[in-house]
Length: 51
Image (tube, rainbow, N blue to C red):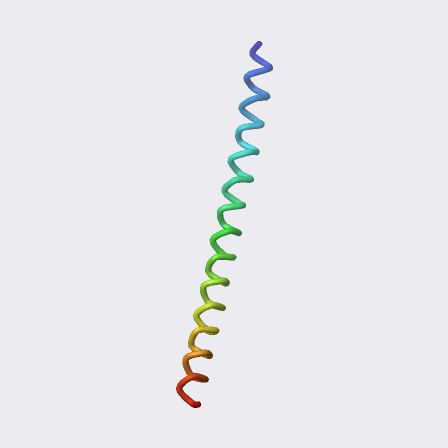
């Protein structure tokens, strides 16, 4: 029984570590997407103004 709970604890640690890593990459991706959309909107705004 002791061994089982130890294994569960290990699995939980691995899962949480993986989740944290996913959160980090997700945040980075969201920042990049936000940056791209911002650039795109500025670009469109400038094009519509120049016409």
